[in-house]
Image 1 (cartoon, rainbow, N blue to C red):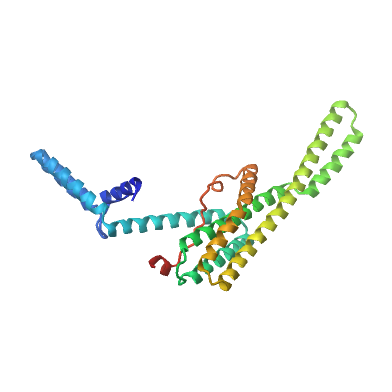
Image 2: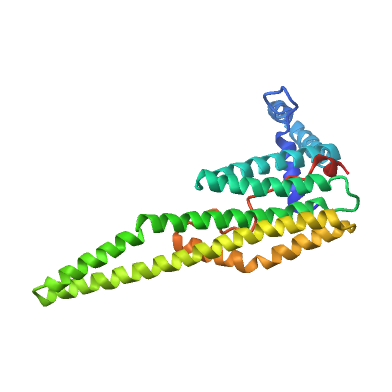
Length: 280
């Protein structure tokens, strides 16, 4: 247990209260000792010793530590679920369903592995979570690009080009000609950006399909192999191949202006380790 972990247990011990109590008993004891010390100041030293002993006893108790760890895990899981729901809300129903299908597929693999001996389930859950995280970020990036393209449809840009070209043909002053020529240049840049956007959409769809196929390959390997460690190695290998994709996603998100939740290294997608594996 590191220093930070010890301090975390100490903090929880200070405010710990049994179920059904409104006020932590430690606070009641401190208040009582503080009032008694007003009459007999020596009791403050006694109270300090008792408080230190109580805090050390409780914070080093294995059962209490497991309770604190379980509470922190639950809080993290709840926060994670809320974050995922917030990200999914940016997607349409079709993409939400697509994401859920992959997430459920990965979770099912973990469930099928729970009774296999000598398997590091947490490592597998972390590795599959990274795959699902990249998949979610790809869907979000695609949704952002689609919004940009839909807000300035290429067809409307072509109509604007034709209109400006007609105006330019009838322009009677150099100033108007320059303004219209500049407009054509801007519209040309927009058409170029739209073409780049369509290329990016093709790349994203290819990467989405690649992840789906990788997950199926991992699942098939889980069924076919007799080596319980090979699945973890395969998951790690697939995760390493997505490094360039992750960097590309960051660049696109920065261009689109959606960088808040998506640029962290830790995935906000946490697949659950089956309960049987946790107790093993």
